[in-house]
Image (cartoon, rainbow, N blue to C red; front, side, top):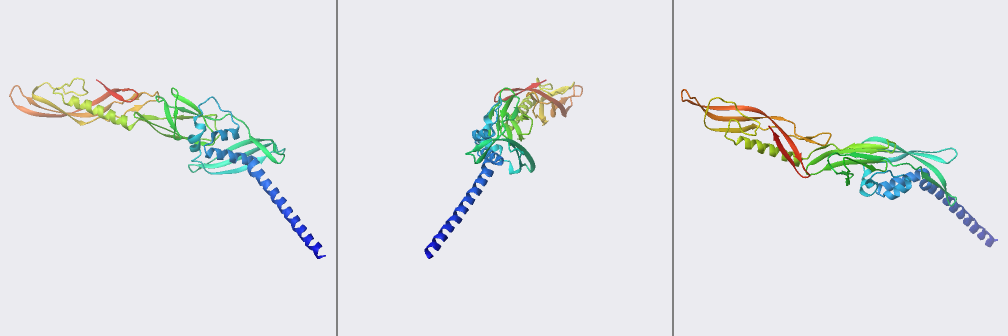
Length: 328
């Protein structure tokens, strides 16, 4: 009897262990099915691919059609940086239709302290080994960013230099993502333009790169204007040739005429909507001094006068420099 009792206890423990193992296996399968193979699992995997800059993996999960556009931003550093500013990502809703064939997953995230939402629609396409559900994000065409950058042939998007054909270029992008566009060269500069593509947006998002003269170019223009005016001021004449100022005097000048620039004009160039460089006319003040001789009395007197003037010029721009061409 004792022997049978011991065997019964062993069998009972074995049965309980098997039951626990089966229960744990079922729970594990359920968790795997929900976290990995459920609709939200697909969305989680998609976001993980974005965070690691794995474009091919993300495209495979999204099953998206790539439009006729530049694909530079679909992989690597540009892709990874596109989600670096997306914070507090969470799934706020995961709903499956009554027949179990369709699902919608809503995600919420924060960009620059503002909350946004994107939605993913999925279709059940079968199962793995008859145990795990198999879902696929419904195919769609990827959105695009249209980068408009007149007068330049490249820009920097999310830290990656990209080419710009003529005045604009379309780039296919994965979503959601933040895309920061900048430009800097010896002649041009542009303030950072940042756009968020959520996937629920219009098919194309336009980014206008607002170009301004670089600090280097502006300094060069200012230096050329100053040099030109200084050259004018060095001339011993009441009417310096090819200069914006002169002094109308009908008396007799004794000795030399001396000019100084009392106030230089503000030579600040701008780039218009067509990408052309313009130097708006600006005012300055020159000062003339000389000795006047009275022909009747022979008396001499000092003349010192402020002479306001307007400086106007055209700008010629090549690949690496800007040249000021004064107009008179």
